[in-house]
Image (cartoon, rainbow over all chains, first blue to last red; front, side):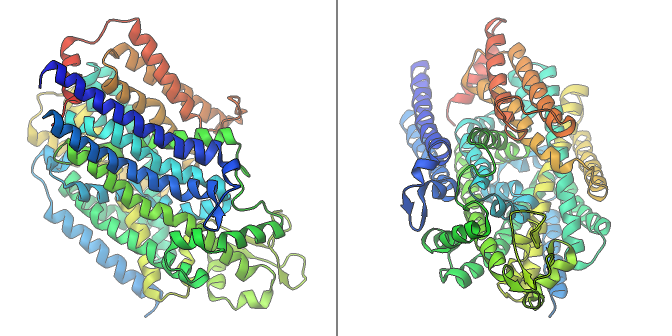
Length: 81
Length: 548
């Protein structure tokens, strides 16, 4: 892999990481903690949405994020190989 | 058959399986001993990581803790899972590419300094030792509670079992026993949870029963009637800022715990490291999304079957009688009106519940057969032993690999290094066992240390080591020391010297977040004003970043 390609590969990887971390921080820190009170006025199923995000939803999103990263990195790896 | 016999059979069978696997995976060289030959498949490493991570506290205490904290218990749920996203995106793939044996290995090589290596070793040892003492204690308590064996004998039995598979098989033996231990603990956790969900809501899937049945609403209503806050009300026990800081500290601390990080050295390649982080979190999430549901079911059920019942009715409940004998549940008609009443005021309340019985009493409350109760004990032991063995290996490798081989005697032969590794595992088991029998009074208080210190020491310097090439030796050492000293002194001040939480009221559990930020800032500033790292180190960082 030459210098230019190496840089491009690293940029693609960094952008992907940044985007996924924004989602990560949004579901956990923002929606489940900072905005939990307003969010609780919405009901999901039979429980307040903010509470559900904090105790169920955020964990499920975490799992999805890691697999999205692994799958997307497979594509980036193939592209630059 | 009685509970005791079933427990003895199931615990005995699982222990024999662990010993057999340890014997099967005995190793002949240091690569096998420290990193399991680096040929563990991604899914298997995921299961091993999940067992490694979920301790006796996750298995026995967490649901109970949440059931008392309500919404505020989310700090543990998000904190102890969210860290895996950081681990998968920012750490695991690159550390696997680096390909050596330990976390201090990376810190020492990346920062071309044995001082940095030594700081990392001290932090790794401290974190692992505080953590392992609690695990051995858990083993002893599980034995004494269910088999009637004194705590110290229980600890010794646990030590012998771990010694056999960890000394013979090192990381390889530990990995494959952890895979089995995950299976035991998750089955033991889910069966009672499914049963009680079915009984209370008619929906057997705990996560769905939690969300779509009316049980949370009912619990909220009962809580308010009794004078408690609503269960779902945020920040009833902790301020918002504190919840935020504790959650971040637990997330970052999780990603910085050496016994979790080293698991990703054992997979064949970078790609497997990414996927195995996903599998690990999926396996963890299975328990972590069940726990909050179990917390609600158990709390609702306890209140419902005890509160406002006559003394005689409560005495007729078998499980209530049994748990009162252990001292974990106290029911006393203080005002003599013949009724048992729960109240938020501890002076008046006639029911006192220890958080540990939330999980442990579920099978009996749900009237499940004796074999399930035995299974829960085997599950709790699996959780404690798997975490203990992972920690013991970190302790062993810190001394045998990082100190003995990399600093004291770089010319040591392969067989000498392997022998030192085995001896150190044995030595670490003995220390852990000693603390299990004679628990230091501060064990409960030092849990905050493990996460806070991991967050404030390892995490920033590893991240910067990969993502910021200019970070140098001077910066890393200064950053780690400042992060460690600040965090440690804040925690010690609060826990032992009644210091006010002067930093915006952030508690000892959350201060690791501040220590981490300090570490980042100091490392960057000091690096900027001191010479850049040598060319070969910068080249190494480039190699870490490229695929394959």
